[in-house]
Image (tube, helix red, strand yellow):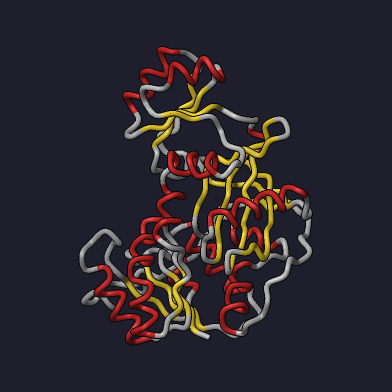
Length: 327
């Protein structure tokens, strides 16, 4: 089986490649990225350079690679590419026979926009952090008090996220953050979780939950926990959303409520953490799609995963250079 992974330099792309390399399936991995110094390129069997996803030439170059390699599956390694591949999914599958693992645009839009996420949760009778847009902040303060969180409606990795404790700080944060949403600050740092759920045919097939510690918006320590009632809850949320394949839910526990504050309609940067915990979601997707194996909930190994820096050496005369977009 041949797999193409985009965004090989991103944390998400790297996690997908690591999980592929841990798979028991015989695979050829083709990786693409705009940078010749993207580490995931050097873990793959084949690699190509492509333009940035926002450039008009991006899909033209990807199509050239698809024509050359004819991969069986395409996994998406960055957020910015999700909507692009959702729009081109049918054409790619029809033209090249490559299965694109991406949800519908409606699902991606709900996940990308935290105001739409809030409304999705509220409208489906699920738990959520109380939230408002600028103009509703005084009522929110009256309802939940301080502290509050001000963050971009569309954003990731805690960029421009501000915790405020006064009206003055709240007003300043609303002016400073582009297109903000204001939310109650729920739970505590030690009650934050990340969950992965696989959904096919609108049914949750597998889930794993990890408590996590954050650094610079990314998980740097995670604690895998056995299957529990929390898993049942996140599976219920995922089934309401109706993604295709993977979805990532981030939440905190507040009292007896599971308050989800972020949804990602994709694998997550902790995908390989889950593989280390005996839940290789990437392999599960491949087995389901190509070998028609039903996905069943596997035993989760309760363990602690510590993320650390590592190095890869590339001789200066060996690293990749761009050659007419396809190298």
